[in-house]
Amino acid sequence: MVILRPEETGLKQLLDRILDKGVVVDTSVRIDLGSVDFLGAKARIILASFKTAEKTGLDFPEGTNLNTSAWQDLKTKQPCPVCGIESKREELKKEGCLWCGWNYRPDES
Amino acid sequence: MGGTTDQMRVKTMERTTLTPEKDDSSGLAGAIDRILDKGLVINADITIDVSGVELLGIKIRAALASFETAAKYGLEFPSGTNLETAAWKEALIEKEECPQCGKRVDREELLNIACPWCGWESAKAKKRKEMKVGAKVEVQ
Image (cartoon, rainbow over all chains, first blue to last red; front, top):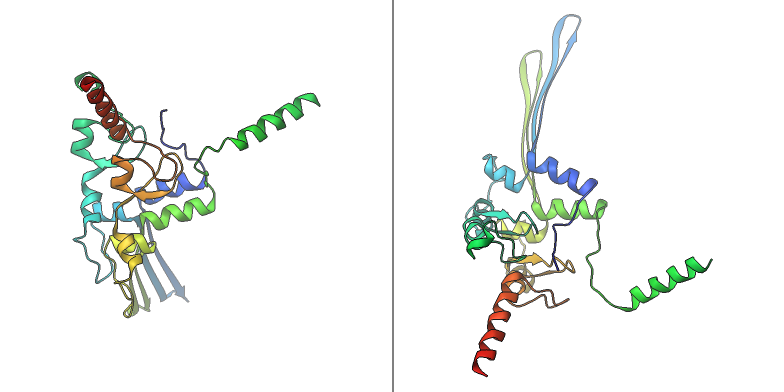
């Protein structure tokens, strides 16, 4: 039985895509009153998944422990192209996917 | 009419053979699940000035995640949270979603043995099993 990465459609995939890419909202608003500069507002907002935030070096809230193994996993793991389960990149290259059996050089195993 | 009863019969037959399946929650619940599981960072710098004089500055560094994800990534919890309970230790065990039934299971167990819920076996577990069978045949 071949287990394929679940075909995801709709909202879930959309959000996934958005958060993996990251969203930047950069706005500035200026209100003049009788040709005099009156009120101004500037907002820079970033929205991203943890993985994207880590990759692009975004700030995390104070007190976050950035040395846990989960952070390491973000850097070293890669999803299998067939089943989508994440494994270490080196392992995936060398031995193929231990979960679904995918191997990118099937002749050598 | 005959067709529909046949279809119904097939459906009931399908229901009686219990095959665990992942319920495809691709709606809002699935989306929220995914966001909380992956974690979301919201950073914002907002300034407001009145006639050229900076009046107010807001700096937001927010991380949104499920308890499990927050524990794994070492986010700080509000003071007074008891992090020594069994549930926290459970949250730190690496888990993976079973590809067949969708239950979250201990990653090592799922990879090396099988899914304790539906019996799904990974390629690694299958290979190991085959090798064992081969060895037994040789002994005989």
